[in-house]
Image: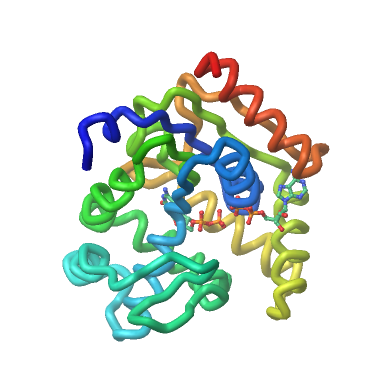
Amino acid sequence: MRPSDSLAPVLTVDGPSASGKGTVAERVAAALGFHFLDSGALYRLTALMAMKRGVALDDEARVAELAAQLPASFGGGAVRLDGEDVSDAIRAEAVGEGASKVAALPAVRAALLDRQRAYREAPGLVADGRDMGTVVFADAVAKVFLTASAEARAERRYKQLIEKGMSASLPALVADMQARDARDSARAVAPLKPAADALVLDTTDMDVVAAVDAVLAHYRDKSGK
Ligand SMILES: Nc1ncnc2c1ncn2[C@@H]1O[C@H](COP(=O)(O)OP(=O)(O)O)[C@@H](O)[C@H]1O
Ligand SMILES: Nc1ccn([C@H]2C[C@H](O)[C@@H](COP(=O)(O)OP(=O)(O)O)O2)c(=O)n1
């Protein structure tokens, strides 16, 4: 890494499940010409790998080993694990649930830390997740905590899964999301919460374009660019 790369500006987008972080962060990154990190995908890949290998999701040492050597690649619009396209497989609710479980293990979080920080390269990075602004990029130039009502988030996830041709039940999604948000918020290490210096943006009554514009405006305000 070149010395200047370590100083590349970072914009963090954290928030609960289906608040729109990924969609908004990816569009903001494209608008700024920045790199993009979907940190949740790393936790999802770790959970999927453990499930495939028959490793218990609470076996901290073995799951952390898998996380440290994750044979994953991102590129050409696909997420690959061991060469296999798992772009849709990692979006299944069961894998999200598994990701939330392995994400509560401190050794797993530690194993993924350097990999996440390596995404910080010139000209800049937009990173989405749960602890981007509080832990991984605590020195980010601008931080956003994206949220929306539980009903709006469950409906968004429902539509998204149906559009992908995956099966979904709205009541089951509401229950899964509540359980996941509760676990992500209550864990001892890097819990889901807004950074003290984050802009909290409630998108319940906003469309994607309005949310993207608000995040871009916040970044420009904070960075002076
Ligand atoms: N502000 C918004 N208003 C309406 N729908 C949105 C908004 N932001 C995102 N969505 C939709 O909600 C769904 C979930 O968004 P996603 O980016 O996957 O959320 P997250 O990364 O927080 O889980 C996507 O289909 C997306 O298009
Ligand atoms: N920075 C992160 C990102 C995700 N996680 C965990 C907690 C989440 O429930 C799972 C899945 O995250 P992901 O962002 O992919 O999930 P959603 O798209 O918001 O439903 O991973 C985390 O602990 N820290």
